[in-house]
Length: 159
Image 1 (cartoon, rainbow, N blue to C red):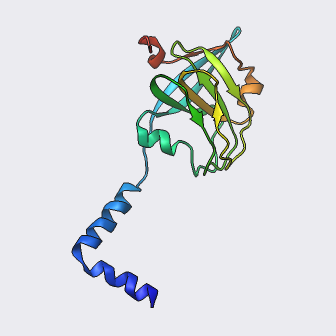
Image 2: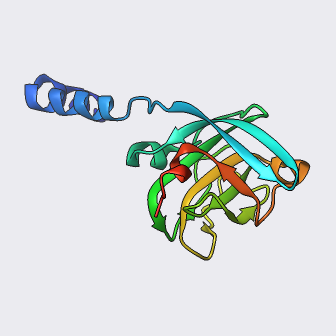
Image 3: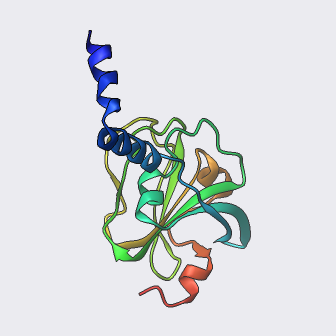
């Protein structure tokens, strides 16, 4: 009975149009690729990153991904320094989160986050960007507070 009434709603053109628009809005979010170089002591680590720069991209992030290959990540650009709170809701894989100031300096690292958690993860100070990497990457590569991330976004002054 309910299903018949629900389906009858789609006989009205406006309801059908609204339903199509809502489905289209839920379509895939696409990300451009870029490269960052993490300078950790005398070591340099290149990472191919998906760029999360729009509100839709930052909201989607790595949700629903089942795998992230080594040597890849996602770089969230918040455009200007701000207090940022990240979470793992709908994220299926554990990640390392690297919090980066406007000059590319690493100010905090959260290791091996818990998939699906709604706990807020923060740097404790304003940041320009957050780099998400496969869990364990930061420890394996010795990435730590005080290291530096090279990317064009940090070369423009970044305020």
